[in-house]
Image (cartoon, rainbow, N blue to C red; front, side, top):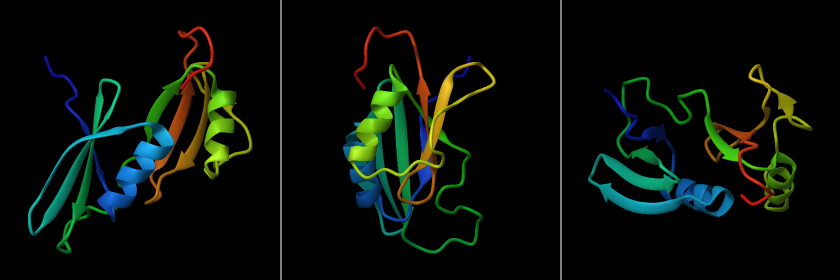
Length: 130
C-alpha cells in the first residue's frame, strides 16, 4: 500500500516561502538541507509534510515555481480564517467562498511564487479556531 510521504513545491526563495507558510498558515519548519545545487526545507502542517525545493542552478527541465494545481488547508470556519488572513495582507482570488462540487465551502489565494492555496471548510470541528 502506498501512503503520501510529502508534497514537493518548487519555490524561488526557500526563506521567503518558509516565512510565508509559517507566518500565514502556521506550518513549522522541521528540517532543512542544502548543497551547491539545491536547498530543501521541510515544513509540517498537521500530518502533512511540505517540501520546499529551491534550485540554485538553472535547470533545463520543466521544473518551475508553482508547478502543481494547489495545496488545500482545512479550516473549521472559513469566514473566520478569511478574516484572519486578510488582516495579514493575504489577497484572495475571489471575493467570497463558493460551494465546491462536494458541497464544501472553498476559496483560493496564492503563495509567494504564485502557487494556488485553497481553504476548505471542514465542519468536523466545533467552533472556529484555525
